[in-house]
Structures are given as C-alpha cells and as structure tokens.
Image 1: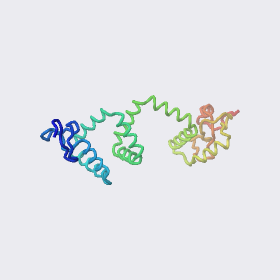
Image 2: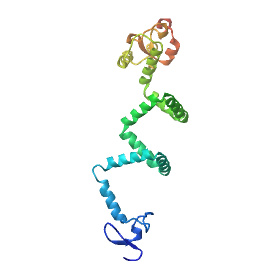
Image 3: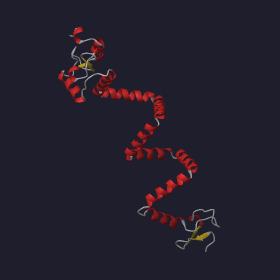
Length: 228
C-alpha cells in the first residue's frame, strides 16, 4: 500500500485518502469503502422498488422519536435554503391540493378563533394588495358583484321567494341590460317593490337599474318617481 493511500473494502483498490469520506468512529478517521463505491451502493439501494415507501416510514419514525432534533434541523435548513423551501411548498400544494384543502378546512373547523385571528392578521399585513385585488375583480365581474349584493339584501330582509342566477340574468337581458327607469347602462339589481315594504325576491320583482336611479329610488315605489 502506498503511503497516504487506503484500500477500499468494496473494490479492493488502493486509493488516496481524499477518495474516502470521513468517519470519526473508525481508527483512521475514514470510511472503509471509497466514495465511488459508497455512491454506487446508495444508488443501488435507492433504485429498489419500495425504497421511497421505506424511507418515508423510517423518516416519519425518526421525526416522532426526535421532535426537538427535527425542529432544530428543520429551522436550520429553512434558514439556509429559503428558495428551495418555497418551491417545495408550492409544488406540494399544487400536486396535493385536495389533501391541503381538506387539512385547512379541518383545522379551521377545529380552531375557529385562531382562524379568525389568522384572517385578521393576513388582512392587516396585505390590506392594500387585497383591496386592489378585490377592486380589480369587481370591475371585471360586475354581474357577479350585483348578484352577490342582491342575494345579501334578500337574505338580510328574510325576503320571500328565490331567483336563480339564470333567472336574474334573463331579467337583465329582458330590459336590454339598461336601467328600467332612465335607460342608462344597468349597474345593480332593483326590487321594484322594496324589500323594506314587503317586496319579494321572485324574478317578477327584479329589474336592472343604474346606481343613480337606485339611490334616488331608495325604498320608494316606482310610481312615486318621475322616470324619463
């Protein structure tokens, strides 16, 4: 054996000490097999059919038995590789969306107070972005916004009757997507007989209206106005 070299226990070749990984428990401080043989052995082990399942089970058992070491190691890795962690989370959320969504729903149901506090913190942190996104969505989806406001008003007044989205759209199209009072472009859905005066939420009581006429009409009946 040449000085400064070591014999590999796998391939039997004399190689420089730099070709061996360190191992403090061995007398010479190096692994018995060389790096190349170790790499080939690891690759062969990883190519076994059930390798991933076995590795997952063993990793889970280790994490359960060493929670503190797992926390320290996880924090250290996340600090050293923030981009990798972000990409892995995004990939996992995309590939296993159903699992993620079910877990979030279960957690929210079991922790309503924490969920509410979490939502408030998120809103305060990203308030400007959230408002801008909502404003952009409302501008791009006027019909959905009008339907949402319409359903909310009917729900708050416990109004009698029900109108599907298709029926409401049919009423808007019937009036040519124009305000039934002034003929301008519609912006909201009006209850002809106001809900506050006992009006229903049936399709026959619904008509498209612009914001100006809607504000002017308020809780009045149409016959009390002077339409153009």
